[in-house]
Image (cartoon, rainbow, N blue to C red; front, side, top):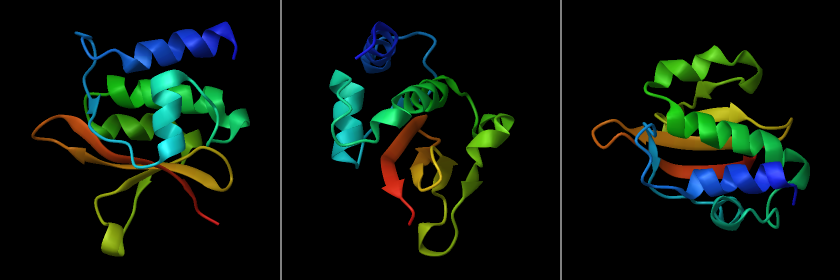
Length: 117
């Protein structure tokens, strides 16, 4: 693991940030949870590790869901139907980060790393 990835995942694990606006309450995908906790790319697409770090850091730093639309290349959208209220961000052609936002607690919940195809 490169030192850049190592230093960023250590920052993601901190819970005592004063600048951290959103807290991640729970992670559904075990590989993504391991990546956040240890930096291990086992269980995720290793080529996507840097982008995942940027997305996770952005999610923790955002103050409002409207900030999600500031990065068009992530193809941000809300899902519909039975998954209404779930946000989706593109990582690669097939892989997405999905999550919901609890506005009362200012937390990201049910963070998941999903293969759409």
